[in-house]
Each structure stands twice: as C-alpha cells, then as structure tokens.
Length: 204
Image 1: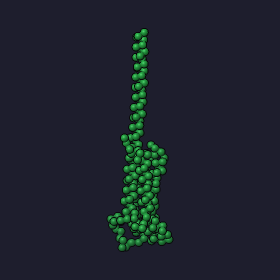
Image 2: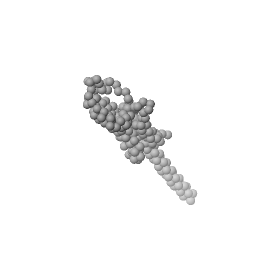
Image 3: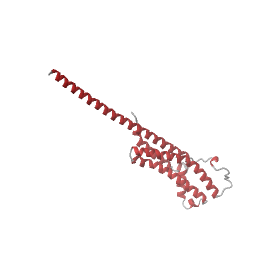
C-alpha cells in the first residue's frame, strides 16, 4: 500500500511539474511576443519620427526668404530679363529647392505605410496633414512661376491671393505683420505626429 501511495505521489508531482513547465513556457512565449511587438513598434515609430523631422527641416530650408545668386541658373541676367526668362529662373530655383522635399516626402510616405500596417489607419490620417503642407508649398511655387510668366498679371487681379502665395513660399513674408500660416500648420502637424508616436518610443 505504501508503494502505491508513493507511486501516486510521484505521478502527482510529475503532473504538477509538467503543468508548471507548460505554464512557464506559455508565459515565456507571451513575454517574447510582447517584447517582439514592442521592438517592432519602437523601430517603426523611430523610423517615422526621423522621416517626419527630415520633411519638416526640408520644408523649412526651402522656404528661406533669402535667395543667393548661385541659386539662379547660369547665364541669368537680372538686369536684362523678360517675364519669360524670370519665370524660367524661378522655376529653376523652385525645382532645386523642391528636390530634397520630394525625397523626404517619399521616405515619409514609406514610413507612414509601415506604421499603418502595424497599427491602424489613424496614423495615416494624422501624417496626411504634414503631407498636405508640402503639397501647399508646391502649388504656391507653381502659382508664383505662372504669375511671373504673366508679368504679374495673375496677382494684380487678386493682390490678397498674391500675398498669400508669397507667404506660403517664403517664411516671414510681410515682416513682423506677416502671419506664417503654413509654418504654423507644419509645426502643428509635426506635434500631432509626435503625440501619436510618443507611447511607441518609450521602451522599458
């Protein structure tokens, strides 16, 4: 009888050990999955925030009100210009200023798609606001070139529109009285992305 009790006790102990082992294994698997997901969240968030800052900086650089002489195309003579030549010059300048933005936008969109795949569509909607700012700048540049080609006829008919376009292209246009509406939108868009990503950037 004692042998039977001992055998039964051993069986119970083995069962408990097996259950404990299984529990530890499951807990370890859950912890591993959680850690893996946390790492993925962090990497995607870090990639997106870097792309966000890159796009923000390129937008800021391109909106500099200072245009150096070497930004103009070779052979351009400001003292002997026609509306057509001046428009071509500004198109040249804006194209060169836009190129880094275009590259930054592509990277930003790629990182946004990764974030959307991992999280939800909400991050795409939030990121779209910064993308919209870059589009606003691009449209303003095109409007400026068109106006220059028309010898300022486009803006003459609507001076308020002309001032708005210039304020979108050049940061600080209008001096102390000028409101940098596009600049404010860029900052707000970046802040909203930061707020959304902040929880994912915290790693224990």
